[in-house]
Structures are given as structure tokens and as C-alpha cells.
Length: 465
Image 1: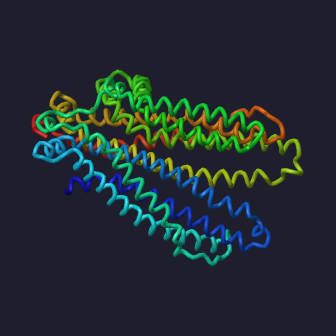
Image 2 (image 1 turned 180 degrees about the vertical axis):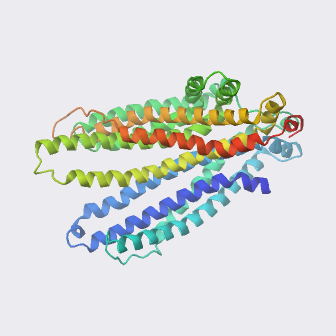
Image 3 (image 1 turned 90 degrees about the vertical axis):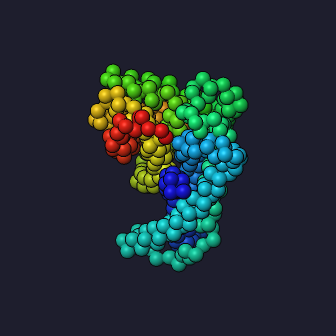
């Protein structure tokens, strides 16, 4: 039982972050709505009052989508580690359906715990931000009611998505056979994954349909700004297809990146580990791909918008005076919101890498028995984490650049009264930040697993699981 609870700590952390973010964002936008309504000038604007909750829910949905993918991948990693235990339970009479139901119920309980804690932490954080904002004069004192039923909505969404993600992530239980209780269980290889026609066909359909809608959004955006909504739907569908096909997309990228780490035994094993189990590798990278794609998409779109504003300022400085300052503030706020979703994705990678190393104790012990030193094992884990991070970052940058340009074109293509081609802005500062963040993530993600690997005794390789 203790092992089961320990396995669910990563899922609890993700649910807690998503719940806290959702509740905090609703409280903050609620306070802003009250402050705006009380203002003699902005209080007359129905547009502002409408846009605040819409924007809030857009970012809440993004965060919950990311947390659902991360939770599903984490649960799948947990199930992979429990394969022998599940097979043993199957051997003594339990059914796959019962074991999958047990894991789904664990997810439901974890979702409740994370959401409840998220409501409390999100409310406390919002109260603290309000006190600081009032004390520093950023915002006037407002009569905002924190006992608001609406803040329970993101909490309910977190509970449901954690439960559903646990159900989806535990589908591997259905493939566990009782005979695996006495054998060495392994995850599906690339050949087996490629043969899963249903999943692969669904991925292709989503990518093709999403790409078509993305193109339609760009075309409509040349005459109507609503084209960005069509493009948004296309982006979600096509990216969902990429997530489904991650087991096919990510291994070649990982193999290419792995060659950059030299030909030492530790580096070569790390590179092979990254592609030997494509299912595990895709679970570890896809969450981070989502995070980097979100940040890059937003950055490219905003950089393109900034370039257009700069051109307008040069043409009509008296009309657009003061616009740039407000634009910078807006970009900073939205960058923080998007960055939170990227944080959830990064934590997902740290979680799955740690669980993966924990489940490879036998393999690590065998390497020690074959003569690997502790420092070589540490180098192997660090190289593996680096390969995963670099591959995810590069993939996210490419996808984000494409989606960012498409979003900017759909949103701004007709903004000047006539169809124009929007040159994609390159957010060099954000790319630099992502590179530094990738290096930090590699260090953080490899600390605990590397330490655990260095403590593995060669005797472990000869012991039974």
C-alpha cells in the first residue's frame, strides 16, 4: 500500500498545480472585474468585462489539458513499473478490469486531494496578491468575495481530468498477462507500437484534419479576425494527433540527438535507452514538447504582433503613442500564464524520469556487475535526461514556430484593412530563456535519479524483482 501511495505522489503534484493555477486565475480575474466595474471610465465597457473570464478560462483549459497529458503519461509509467505485481494478481484470480478500476479509483482520490488543496492554496495566494497590490498602489481596495462558487469549477475539472487521465494511462493493464508474474516484463517495442493501426490512423486523421483547419483559419484571417478561432481548433486537433503519434515521432529525434553526446559507453547506452523503449521515451518527452510548443507559439505570435505595432508607430507616432508600454505589460502577464502550463509539463518529465530509473534497478545493478563505475552510471542518467530535454525542446520549437506564425497570420492577416503576409517574428530572448531552462531542467531531472543509480549495488542484478 505504501508503494502504491508513493507512486501517486507525482500525479498528486500535477493535480495540485493545475488546481492552484485555475483557482488563483479565477480569483485574480474576479478581483480585476470588480475593480474595473468600480472605475468611472472602464466600468462602462462590456467588452472588458466579457474578455476577462474568457481569457481566464482559455488559460485554465490549456493548463488542464497539459496536466491531463502529464497525468496520463505518469500513470502509464506507474503501470509499467507495476506490471509484475499486476500479473501476479491476475495469476491468483484478479481480472484486468478490476486492476484497471483500482488504478482509476486511485486517480480519482488523488484528483480530489489535489483539487481540494489547490482551492485552499489558490485562494490564499490570491488573497496575498491582493494585499500586496493594494499596499503598493497597483490596485485599489475592492470588495471581492472569496467564497465564490465559481472557483470550484476548475477544481471539479481537475478531479475529472485526473480520473479520466488515470483511466486512459492505465490501459496497459489490459495487455498484462498472468505469465508475466514469473518472467521479465518489458514495454512495447517500436515495431509493436507502429502496428497499432487504430491509434496510428486516428493520429493521421487528426493531423490532416487539424492542418486543413489551420490553413482555413489562415485564409479566413485575411479578411476576418475570426479566422484565428478556426486556426485555434485546427492547432488543437493537429497537435493532439502529434501527441497520439509521439511513439513514432520522438524516437528518430532522440536517436539524432543522442549522437551528439559522443561515443563513450555511458553516452551510447544513454542514447540507446532513449530509443529502446519508445513508449517510455515518448511519455517522458511529450509533456515537455507541449510546454515548449505553447511558449514558442505565444512568443512568435506576440513578436509578430510587436513588429506590426512598431511599423504602425513609425507610420503614425501620434496615434500609437503609449501602445508599446501596454503591449509589453500584456506580453509579460500572458508569458507568466503560459509559463505555468510549461512548468506543469516540465514537472511531468522529472516525475517520469525518476519513476523510470526506479523501475530499472535491475538493469542498473547489472551494469555495475559488468564493471560500470558509479560515476559512469551518473553520466549515463545525465546524458539520457539531456537527450530527452534537447529532443523535446527542439521539437517544441519547430512546432511552436509553425503554430505561432499560423496564429499571427490568422489573427493579423486582415488587421490593416487588406490581406497582408505577416512575417513571423523570431523571439530571440525567449529562445535563449528556453535553452537556459532546458539546461536547468536537465540538471534538476537527473539529480535524484543519478543519486539513486549510484547507490545500486551489483548484487541487485542477481536478485529477483
